[in-house]
Length: 202
Image (tube, rainbow, N blue to C red; front, side, top):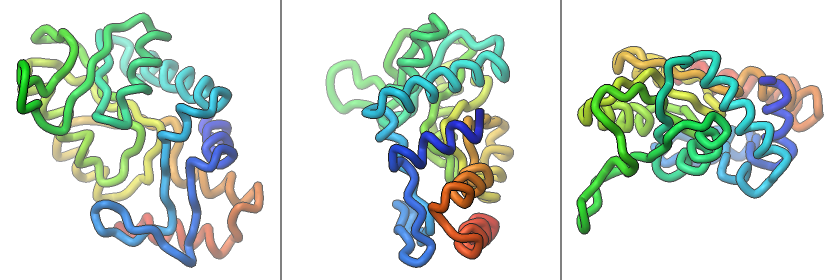
């Protein structure tokens, strides 16, 4: 399934591989890869495979899950579709509380003690996902872990997840992606090495 998801991400242009002309991430990191999983939503065939895969991943790794919570904004749609497949309640967590109305940060009815899985589209340094986990814990949820579509597998991200006492399971990872990209001639063997060296440096 991991290779199939990698092929889907490449086929719809959700992953850009540019070792010779790096992208700048929001964190300022210069990266040879950029992943835009929002494009999955507008590609029905890829979307069907990704959401079915997320649902199976959640059932396999978090069988006690009682509710899905999407990260704002990229995880919301994926959490909603997977929750529909699994017949589970769903909500989402804002990056910060609203300044009007009920001033909610967590949207959706969630009782204290609810076993929750956070749905995220992408794990890099894991900061945004951990922020959501902590907000849910403060609200009384039992956070079982994170389910994501793709992870870069950065050492920095793994360390932060461990320090936060949480786990992430992803549908696809960078190692699989570059293997498939090489097989399909998206990149050369030298470029694959550049991308993996970048990942290992972080």
